[in-house]
Image (cartoon, rainbow, N blue to C red; front, top):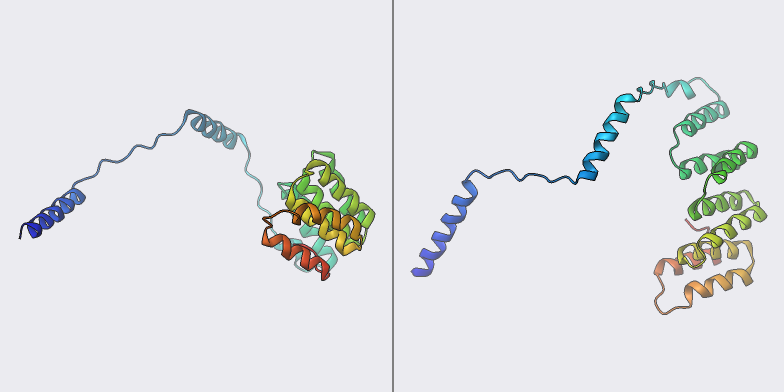
Length: 199
């Protein structure tokens, strides 16, 4: 009986505590965050709103190539990072307008391009069948990140696909030579030997 009373009392106390009005918890915001937020609000007030773009007008009533270029031009104007810019360069390059694709690539590489950018550039050139340019881009990745196994694996896969087993095997040995090998690396290597490009 005592156990029942104890349980009943505990239940009543819990219910009473839950029913009591709760004091709101004050959120503590670090001073740096407050300063950044204030600076951001000042910038937003000074920045003029961008005019609305009628995206339908970019393709409506236009033939394929004209519509595609208009959409890509708008996308390039809005592109924020190198990945977006290089995605646009890839489309131009692979669709036959290599000059426009190359111009975008040159703008990205004039600024400080990182290993991801160079890998993406190498992928573009590889897809276009420009192996010398692809290999040059892959070498820049290896200069920037010589020991990063993710980059080594991707580049090894491209060497396999190109048919350069000596360089492919040298890179694969560095990635797959350890005790603990990520399954994704086995998948990429296997796919490359079966003719499938890395994702």
